[in-house]
Amino acid sequence: MKPKTGISLGLMMFLQYYIWGSWYVTMGTFMTKFLNSTGIQIGAVYSALAIATMISPFFIGMIADRFFAAQKVMGILHIFGGILLFLAARVTSNTTFYWVILLYSLAYMPTIGLSNSVAFRQMSDPGKQFPLVRVFGTVGWVISGFMIAILGIEQTPGTFNMAAIVSLALGLYCFFLPDTPPLAKTPATAKSVMGIDAFILFRDKPYLIFFIAAIFVCIPLSFYFGFANLFLNQSGMQNAAGKMVMGQISEALFILAIPFLFNRIGVKKMLLIGMTAWIARYLCFAFGNMGPNAWMLYTGIILHGVCYDFFFVTGYMYTEKKSNDRIKSASQGLFTFVTYGLGMFIGTWFSGFVTSYYTVDQVYQWQKIWYIPAYIAVAVLICFIFFFKEKKEIGIAK
Image (tube, rainbow, N blue to C red):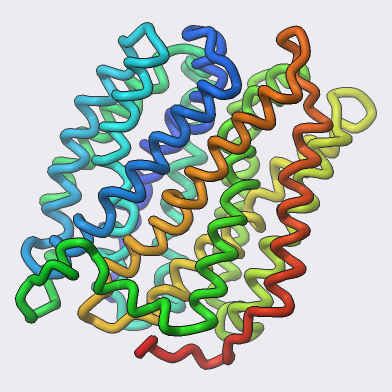
């Protein structure tokens, strides 16, 4: 991969995750303050993102695999998404807000898999080169958090306006990315239109076990994305969104270790490290406070790097290794479906229900809330240890 190409892909990742980081983490806090939302309503809106993920990535991935260049499809989706984000900043009811976020999510979520496909196609050694490009996405998320703090818009509609501007910019930039034409040469069928081509991965038992584990790991992830910012604000942490940037800085640092570890300790150990970190994070949140145990809150934030990189970034690379050329884009859409789709749909509704259940007189019982994702992470970890059997040399699924 040429240096110029690497810079181009790095900027793509930077903007891709800057957009997401601009509005996603603080949305629960925004909804509580401006829309007077309950825990269930917050969970419902976060589930809109998951619903979109289950609907759109397969179809969009199929289009990119067979008909149109992936970067051009990305450009159109981001421009449309930017318009919807401007609209999201101006609605005043929970119901309308839900539908706007759902429609936006239908546009945004396919671009995660497409951006990965664009990057992978330009690389001679994805195992070593992809983390170095993907880290710019983490930097984008970090910078978005800093900008929220600098502009003082954490609990305002300004987060959506900022995301909208960047989304329009990325949409235009996509048309100048390296060309990524379709690879698949076979004609489209009903199976391909529905994205079922990528289901060939389920014939591979280790990937199927990973698929199931990824669904359940997304439940703890849903608790963090949906309620961590609200929890930290209510715990008395000043400029919580800015402090949560430490998690993304941690992610940027740990992602640099991925190329070294992926080929040396194997995918199973990396995934186990990620799941163990989820347990530690929620125990820190359960017992932390802004008094003597403030260090536990900061530790829980910083652990985000291990939690995310060692499971989700590793998962994208594992999926790439398992896929043949015909299903490259669709398989990335499949992994997005597993994590940000089905898993997050279950997780967002479940986290919303748990949060509302442990609310008394509009006061959240945070310690009891954080116990739940910790227990789930323990259960997934134990099952994964016994059932996931993958060779160090990962083969393409047949």
